[in-house]
Length: 228
Ligand code: C5P
Image (cartoon, rainbow, N blue to C red):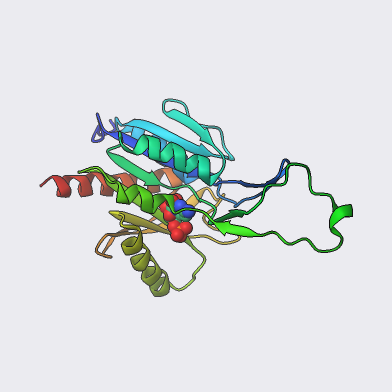
């Protein structure tokens, strides 16, 4: 039997990748499939949690048995996350949020005849949703961030992760290597989890479901530590 160690806990998970519109038919996006976030939502539900999944452009079917809120842009994800965080005991930000969005969204399809051989897109930074969530953290709330890095060197990746965990104010940061063939869209994942102090708490390789369970083990440990 699956341990019901998240029974009665409200878990908010974000998954997928945001799309930032350029015009009515085009967007700036990323290759996040949503598989790891969906695996986290399903694993949390299997362990008894009341799960809300903020789903940004999933490549796979949205799961059943959890509350699913569809979002597309970073602005929509931010609004939904800020609305839901007050109720959540655990927040897991697995979504790949676009760092930038087009300054202007053309109201009609951009035409090559009007543009010639070059077209420049001007982008502006999106707000950091995770930082906003940690800044309004409820007492006892556990917040988990993700860091997708293409950095191949493990020590360099850890250094980036430690700086990011501190900057974002998260309880746990899941480092995963992404690249042309790893991480995003893949069926398996390879992760290192560090805590707020920068200590390595787990390393796991395997299916996104097994990685999800390992992350949730750490969430329950972290919540128990905080309650002591
Ligand atoms: O800074 P970086 O994009 O590497 O941080 C990744 C983490 O921060 C992920 O958990 C992602 O969901 C979150 N994030 C966010 N808002 C942004 C960018 C990233 O919440 N604008």
